[in-house]
Image 1 (spheres, one colour):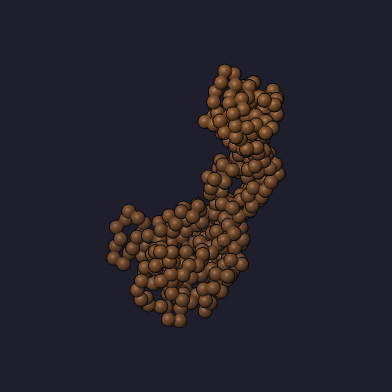
Image 2: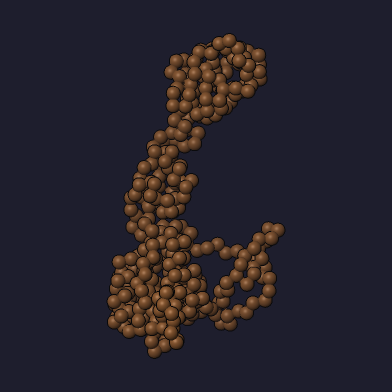
Length: 356
């Protein structure tokens, strides 16, 4: 029986990213870049002012000097005339520096005169000026493949003139819950029946991860019914079934998959919970068979399915980081199987407390 590390390595070696698609930037939030993105221009496109104040040529201007005002520069309305020595131009934040200027003095460090302005403080050359290309230069690589596009990245690309990007699509995941004992939410379970809660848990988790779940309904415990449902799942990027993967008389998922051409990569892993987890491919699509027990289904989803989904989405770090912490109470291990326990992690004075 495989251990967890060997099993997850098989998953990571089998699953590959989805083919990239191109889409408008405004639709790309939550997607992962498939290609590098380069700036279309410099930002700022010209030297501009970081303050409201007055622009002038430094030329060793000193405290107390008076500069004659020759015009105004506003954001979106630059001053085209050249500012000569001994002159200054009123300027607002974000406005391009007029020709001949290289320094800005804030309003509060000046005294207004009739048609002029006096410096109340000795300036420094180039002060309060954002240099052209200070943020990035034309053709500079801004983002690399594998970066998830969030609000900050979207804003950055928009400022660089990027209107369309090539990204990995959101993984579409088919969910099949199997078992004659299952009933749909809204129905009252009869004797020996339970609500199909796995569908709702897994669908919610998939949406949290940015995936698009597709419910295949409840697959009854017959090979024909399972084959029909599993076949419908081939239109998605990954198939996920719960239940029917153990060795019971009604556990038909694996034999049905094999009859459809399923290539099994592993079945059963030395973990607790989730020992009978199944993984392989069907027509090139990853297929996971998770245990029907809700706790085991949720655990194996996090241990195996989530890393696979991150690969499909194009992320470079499919596995979660491993952290060390101090247990707050004794726990029982899994014997010969590696135990995975649900717990809560709290940080206290720079260290983690693990609360089962």
